[in-house]
Length: 606
Image (cartoon, rainbow, N blue to C red; front, side, top):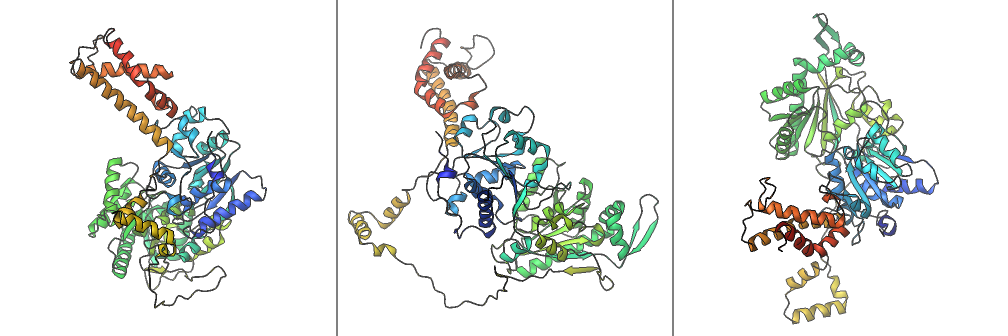
């Protein structure tokens, strides 16, 4: 019977110095909610980019004392990242990295990916990780075979998606489970609000103060007057700044003409390059980059061409582009072979590249949510937990006529601090452009402690580090070490032997998967040995009685495969469904099954 490790283990969370403040606070808020006796089933937690959302997902099952948790991501990339956090075979395993659980047993993870896992794997699991696409469709095999009480907790990463129909179907499949939506923004791009009762939020302003995300400033562009051409009549019209802002709010054609006109596009390009050069020079770090948002495929080309013509290495990614081409661009970005990457909402959730430091906005955002998602791409810090470090600065460049900040009410009901911060960052009222064609806005930045007091950091001197030989305080341990050295073992051998005492962890799903792969290799090897013993070449055709042009190796291996499948009552294409117990039974019976198959193939001769 499966142990309930999220219930039985004693994780170190509340007083864990390695965890971040929002992770511990979100955990506490969840525990307090459950203790309150509130019967609300669906909850929400809002954490800005870079504040440890994946780590929060890893510790929440302990708050619920879950029997089996389902973690759902919006795409494959995020699902793989989350699976790695739960995987004890990975070097950055979250529970060990932060001393939450220091020794086995560890919660058993399974990632649903194609047919690489089966129901028996899920039965062994404490946590199942997947992307929503794996659970789509009315005839989805997982939703058909899993009982309605299979999961008692469902965690949705990027939970603002969870109001979509596919996610709602999943919720209704497991009606008794708790649901927690985690996101950096409570709204989808279509304006729908994230489902659930919000029990915890961590404001972006506070995340900046803590050094979890970059501090931001804005560069707002617009001349005192602007000429533009109306598409419907071809007439050139000159308008004032006030009219630019009004049209930006009310006229969608005007907004589109603003960001696609060469004059405006070149202005945004030039301003973003100036800012990139400034940050690179000020920090001495040449890796800083620009990320630009475009309207569409042709707009991507237009923006890339503008940057390239100014000597920058620019490229784009787009959903219409070939996936291999997009991957090449990603690799160039990671290898610092690109200064500017242009995209149409392609570099979204799950993308992490801290060197993106300038966000150049050439597109239109109909609400605050997608804007926050895009700006989130430049908010990852380069130096952790150091809010005043020169490397941790980001700049948003946009045009006043683009109607960037039109819906502050989106955030008001969730975080007044976030609303106040973005109002400071992107104000569009009473800007005086009479003496300049750009205005720089740097939101007030004051470090505060939990009591609201300002913190003044002074130089710390005279700090020394010394190693403390704790072993000398234990005479028995010291005597044991001396005896080992007296027997001829070197200090290095003793050290290595002690390090080897801790076994490398594995998981049950990996054990089953490796056993399944090993079975196929063993059958192939057995078939090859039999053919060799009978003087037949593996690629010969002597055994193909049905004249299907099959090599001897395939004929014999297929016969053994059939015996193996029949032994456990599975069909030809059901090997992925073999359980670990079935694989163990096959292993014990394999020699006999091979002998039976050989007799059939060779007409009564083993």
